Length: 65
Image (cartoon, rainbow, N blue to C red):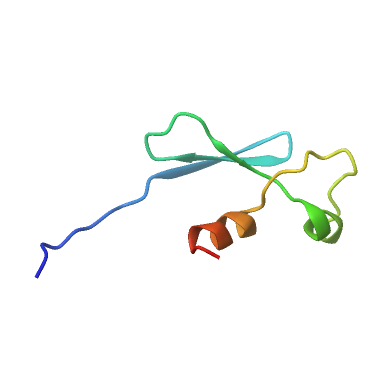
Protein backbone atom coordinates (compact mmCIF):
# COMPACT_ATOMS: atom_id res chain seq x y z
CA UNK A 1 0.00 0.00 0.00
CA UNK A 2 1.19 3.54 -0.74
CA UNK A 3 2.43 5.83 1.99
CA UNK A 4 -0.09 8.18 3.56
CA UNK A 5 -0.19 11.55 1.82
CA UNK A 6 -1.83 14.67 3.21
CA UNK A 7 -2.26 17.84 1.17
CA UNK A 8 -3.44 21.11 2.71
CA UNK A 9 -4.61 23.63 0.14
CA UNK A 10 -3.59 27.20 0.96
CA UNK A 11 -6.06 29.62 -0.62
CA UNK A 12 -6.65 33.32 -0.12
CA UNK A 13 -9.62 35.23 -1.55
CA UNK A 14 -9.75 38.97 -2.16
CA UNK A 15 -12.57 41.09 -3.55
CA UNK A 16 -11.42 43.66 -6.11
CA UNK A 17 -13.86 45.65 -8.23
CA UNK A 18 -16.69 43.29 -7.19
CA UNK A 19 -14.78 40.26 -8.51
CA UNK A 20 -13.28 37.42 -6.48
CA UNK A 21 -9.54 36.94 -6.87
CA UNK A 22 -8.38 33.54 -5.65
CA UNK A 23 -4.71 33.13 -4.79
CA UNK A 24 -3.98 29.40 -4.87
CA UNK A 25 -0.95 28.12 -3.01
CA UNK A 26 2.37 29.41 -4.30
CA UNK A 27 0.94 30.66 -7.61
CA UNK A 28 1.41 34.42 -7.75
CA UNK A 29 -1.26 35.19 -10.38
CA UNK A 30 -4.84 34.95 -9.06
CA UNK A 31 -7.74 33.16 -10.67
CA UNK A 32 -10.41 35.83 -11.20
CA UNK A 33 -13.98 34.57 -10.92
CA UNK A 34 -17.01 36.22 -12.43
CA UNK A 35 -20.18 35.12 -14.16
CA UNK A 36 -21.25 34.49 -17.73
CA UNK A 37 -24.30 33.50 -19.73
CA UNK A 38 -27.46 32.79 -17.77
CA UNK A 39 -25.59 33.13 -14.45
CA UNK A 40 -24.87 36.77 -15.25
CA UNK A 41 -28.58 37.53 -15.55
CA UNK A 42 -29.58 35.26 -12.63
CA UNK A 43 -27.22 36.99 -10.20
CA UNK A 44 -28.04 40.46 -11.50
CA UNK A 45 -24.51 41.28 -12.60
CA UNK A 46 -24.21 44.68 -14.24
CA UNK A 47 -24.45 44.63 -18.04
CA UNK A 48 -20.90 45.96 -18.30
CA UNK A 49 -19.45 43.31 -15.96
CA UNK A 50 -16.66 41.33 -17.62
CA UNK A 51 -17.56 37.88 -18.91
CA UNK A 52 -15.49 35.50 -16.78
CA UNK A 53 -15.75 31.87 -15.75
CA UNK A 54 -17.65 31.24 -12.55
CA UNK A 55 -16.63 28.96 -9.71
CA UNK A 56 -19.23 26.53 -11.07
CA UNK A 57 -17.46 26.47 -14.45
CA UNK A 58 -14.17 25.65 -12.74
CA UNK A 59 -15.70 22.89 -10.61
CA UNK A 60 -17.24 21.21 -13.67
CA UNK A 61 -13.95 21.45 -15.57
CA UNK A 62 -11.99 20.10 -12.60
CA UNK A 63 -14.03 16.90 -12.46
CA UNK A 64 -13.62 16.39 -16.18
CA UNK A 65 -17.02 17.05 -17.57
